[in-house]
Length: 92
Image 1 (cartoon, rainbow, N blue to C red):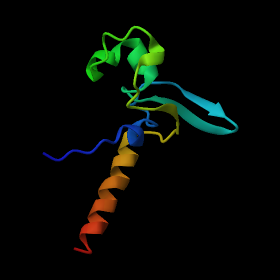
Image 2 (spheres, rainbow, N blue to C red; image 1 turned 60 degrees about the horizontal axis):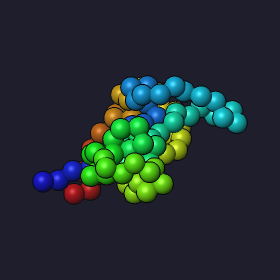
Image 3 (cartoon, helix red, strand yellow; image 1 turned 120 degrees about the vertical axis):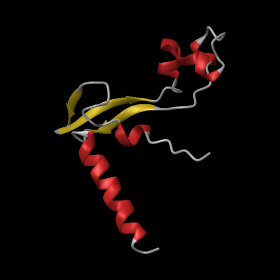
């Protein structure tokens, strides 16, 4: 079973939740991984076997919170990823 985690890669797109905001002249979106303290404090703790923890200072984070650059529609990001894979296959 192979998998890739790409949450922050797509977090800045239009299709991800959250509002676009300006900071020092650049556009960003807030990013909160589901294993972050903020997400667990708001209800995802059971996914990380920490549902019984009542004190948020004792939660053990497995994710991050921050901001990511705004990227526009996800189609543009996926187009670039597909193009990169196609180009890489040319070397194999």
